[in-house]
Length: 264
Length: 270
Picture 1: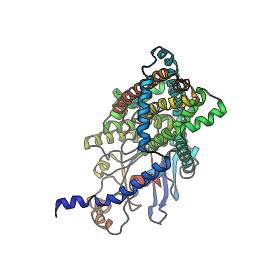
Picture 2 (picture 1 turned 30 degrees about the vertical axis):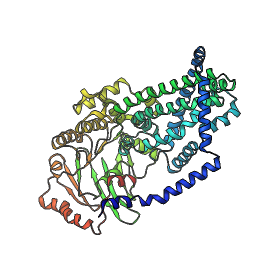
Picture 3 (picture 1 turned 45 degrees about the vertical axis):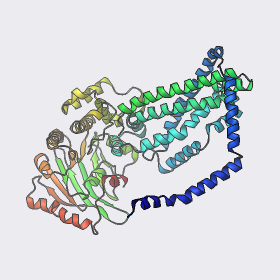
Picture 4 (picture 1 turned 120 degrees about the vertical axis):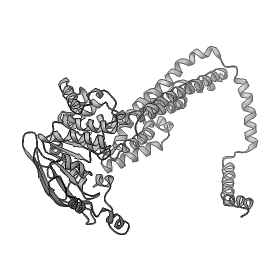
């Protein structure tokens, strides 16, 4: 067989899907009113705006530290309570710890939570708690359930079934099996997942802050609204440093856990 | 003493997994259950400590006060009570690998203390001492502080035995305790289990007739869910052929129509 002919033929099956994709993309752009002229226009304005923002307002830097710290603490508290909540949900959502209907209900709730963005939860909570860190913490804690609950439940379901049989065989009850069998065995995953969630929550706490949960996100939003662009630039730099720093830290910690961890 | 009568278990499709299994084991006896794969050995053993409910039959065991219980009829709470004194050694150890060796031994007594106590302040010094003594009996007391996951297979199985000893059981069950060990480790494990039978009945499932001939006091053979032999542990070649002989022939049969033996995973789900 002619090799050249063969290699050309194998791409034929992609033609129709690619045309379809192009058509849908074009349609979506028309619906949104997105054009390349607008992109070019926006980019030009963006560069002008960026020049307008710089240099950052260095004296405002010290004012940013406290809100940045608050954002990290919101994320931290949200992650701690969220992890605790997730452990409970994960156990209810594991076939080897809970009866079938409980597991399925818990799995459904976890899936439901995952489909609600944190920002929506926050807006609902602000109606109840008012503005401030409190609704932010709760929103982040609830936001953990969707991800951590699922990951931990899957980890628990993969535990050695005969290890659980062995504990049951000495007359241990469910609670004892959980404390002495399940928790020690899922600990590496638990720590690793919740550190990863902490990274996500630090980024989310910035966004939630801008919507009304306080912290560095609020500073950024406030500076923009007050047309203090140099100050906004400072806030932006602090956010980047904060997110990048915590991500590196968490990554390093997680790497060590994975190396030491011996779940399977 | 443990007394098993008329154990029967069928699959929903009518296939008989256990058919009228019955035997009695007194203290001082070390009974080895032999049989080809899928004969029902593990199923029988799981019935003995209530991990599996048979369709009919009874399993009478004595608790530490000499009181008799029928494992097949008691409720969950009583079952937990009876299990406190039934030591079980599983194939493949199945310890909590991230806990220390000593903690794994202590798990043996979880059923005997209250939940609150086990979680809040754990075990007393006296109990820790006894757990160490149990480890001493299996000759790995020096490893008490090690993480269990770092131990070798033979060592882990010894921890499992120590856990069973620490339970101060009135009955010891062993499900293929030496199946994934090398011959010298297997011998060590058999030598450790054997003396335990001086005070309590010991029932184990094995795949090695030469081992049961050497260490057991009695052998029971199960085939196709039926007991086909119960007696002297030294089996003649003819007997062995009766028990295992057709395995090769069966292998060929499986490819066509004979039902495959249940694997461990399926047995757990019964």
